[in-house]
Amino acid sequence: MSWKTYTVKEPTELTVSKYVKERFSLSSRDIQMMFRKKRVKVNSRVAHSQRSLKKGDVLTLELPQDKDYGVDVEKGGPITVLYEDAHTLVVNKNPFMLVHPAGQTKSCTLSNYVAGYYAKKGVVHKVRPVHRLDRDTSGCILFGKTKEAQQYYTDELQAGRIDRIYTGLVEGRIDSDGVVDAPIGVDPVFDNRRVIDEFGQPAQTEYTVLSHDGGDHTLLRFKLLTGRTHQIRVHMEHIGHPIVGDAMYGTRNKPYTRQCLHASELTFVPYGKDEPITVTCEVGDDFGREK
Image (cartoon, rainbow, N blue to C red; front, side, top):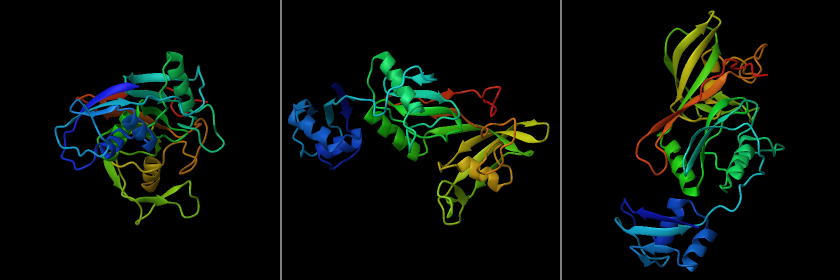
């Protein structure tokens, strides 16, 4: 167990149990155990679960620690740590790899390797990716080591306070910066694809020209203003400049072995801290041609 002290900073009418459950993203079972064992205090006194909270109250809690990783542990996997503290981990995801086990793929995912990284350090944290990247997209992935950190980052992401920057190589020549503002929905025929749909979710992607490759390709910097599935890939196909090597929304020809899309930067305020940081991950010289 680990102790946590937190001052209620906002007006609230919630009971202690409801506030703790929402604020720290705990299960009902965890909440019941904490109150049963008197591990929740308000203003230094053991609290009843139905006590009402008010702004300025000081909560002291003994939070439950993780007992497992949530996925199979695989040590020795390709893990490059870009940033780490007590609550946060950012790593580089290699291409051709899922972020988390799904479907028939139960092993050799980034989450399996992150579990192996934790285990090698002798600590237990449930593996909690805050966001995802497509299998063939490489770059920065953010993990919350604790339930409260994961919930914090989830809220920050939904509020647009985590800036995600991508680098991508697109077909054709683009000479000026721009913004694609087009709603995205699920393809009515293939549910694993996305399409531009006037009734879909709002989606905006900023792009900035970085360089040109002999006039045939353009290297772009993308900033996501929203976070829709396949957003950059769908938007670039929509304006006639699909991502190079994107077999789903364009074409894949040699020497490219995957879509040339890389999550190159994350800017965020780490959980428990006050100042933002920027974590970067450079694109390799063999970008899109790793196999």
